[in-house]
Image (cartoon, rainbow, N blue to C red; front, side, top):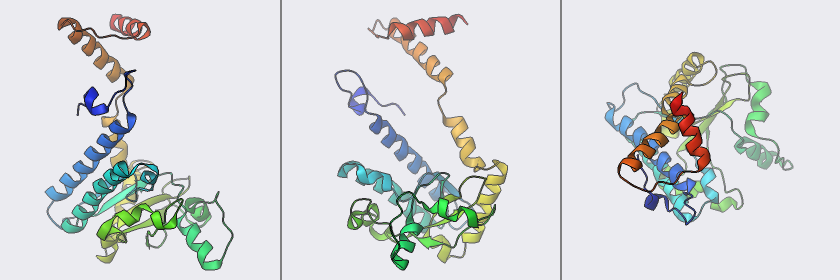
Length: 256
């Protein structure tokens, strides 16, 4: 997808807004997931993966418009999954969430432990392939418990669950899974597929590892794009200004 300077909202220095790019990429990723889910035969034995979280706590710090943007993207995924009965797993390899730590603190009147997170707490108790029970996420806001991102999830507010699964020698990974998967008795099957993916991927889901490998723009891809851009601008007699450092690098690499 091509974003123009107008789309990016460039300022006078020509620096694009990185957030616009991140939001568009996230939108395209979730749209592709929804397309995959809806294209599948309802209830067929297929599984979708999201590299990230279904509970968009990271968006709480954003302004309301951006926050709502991320929520709407994820709501489309959750609704498509439940309506078409195609499970989705949001895989978070390194997580610092503290839902269970907070639960224990409230249940047993324990002091706050801001440096302790769930994966760290569970790590001594889980061997490879073992998982926790299934929990429903009811996370409050980071600053105000009543202002959590889940309050914007409408009918899906209490429809996102999670388990922790030991997949390698590091802390357990967090899997966020729609509640309907558990209600339909598909949780064990879904987690077994995640285990298979992790075995093939040597500690990380093979499907996510492969997607990243074929989607990432490498340095040589970027340099090729800049060279094509420079040639096109020269042919069309457009004034394309590149830093002398960039020009020097391009010329040197073109010779090679």
